Image (cartoon, rainbow over all chains, first blue to last red; front, top):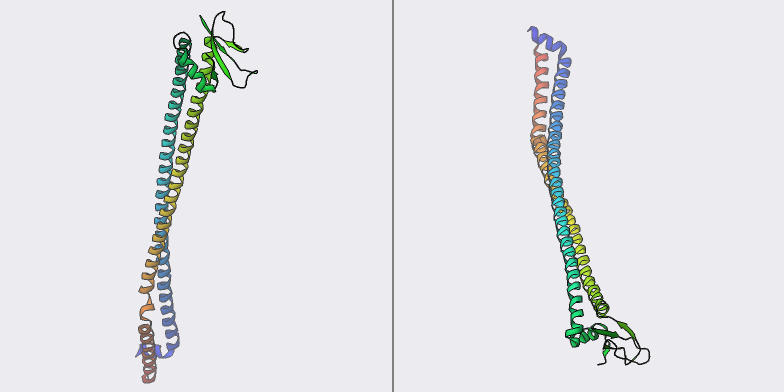
Amino acid sequence: MQYLAIIKKYWKEIFLVALLVGFVLKSKHEANLVRLAHSAAEAALQEEIEMLKSIHADEIEQREKALKEYKESMRVLTEEYERALEEISILRSEQKEQYVEDFSQDKDALAEAIMIRYGFTYVP
Amino acid sequence: MFLSFLLISTAIADDTFTFLSEGQPAPFEGTLFNPSATAELLVTAEEFEAQCILETEYQLDVQGTEYKLHLDNLTASHDAAIASQQQTIITQQTKIDELQTIIKSNSGQSKWFWFVGGTILGGAIYYGIDQAIGSAP
């Protein structure tokens, strides 16, 4: 009976407090939902960052591999080029000796070489 | 010893040449080269031709290699762009799914239940308080 008397006297205040408590609890629930949404977004973005880092690392690796292949190809090409230049130089010396020899041994071959090279007419 | 006689003729129409022995009279005027100089003229032209072919092939190979590097780099960028794009799509989809799960867990799906329940509960509380106040001495 004593409680009823108190409720009767302060029922408006009690109702107001109950409503406030309800409002606070609901607000907390909403805040928790926002926090959950934020956590979900943060986790997703964190995962995206990690994946982008991995993708970037893969790209760098691919580029480094391509650069390595390029350097190796250039090295081989340059080596072959220099070797070919040396071969041309050697062939030049040998060919020159051959032409000098042809003067005494095979004039026809020499004449043909001059005709083919320069288009001159041979007068025997 | 034989001497070669290479002639760039000015008197006759054709460019001609012949071979002469030492002391032999020249059939036409011209420039006389010894065998070594004649050989030098021939091999120099051949050498230039060979070097030209070699240089052309080398430069083409270098250009091809550079283009390959460029292509490889572009391929790497392209692959990375596709992968990051796909990853962004996956991330956004995951985010959407999670947010939808959160929204579904909220009162949105059963809002009528909450509305009706709240109205009934509120009415009951009000009625209870009213009854309590009315029955109190």
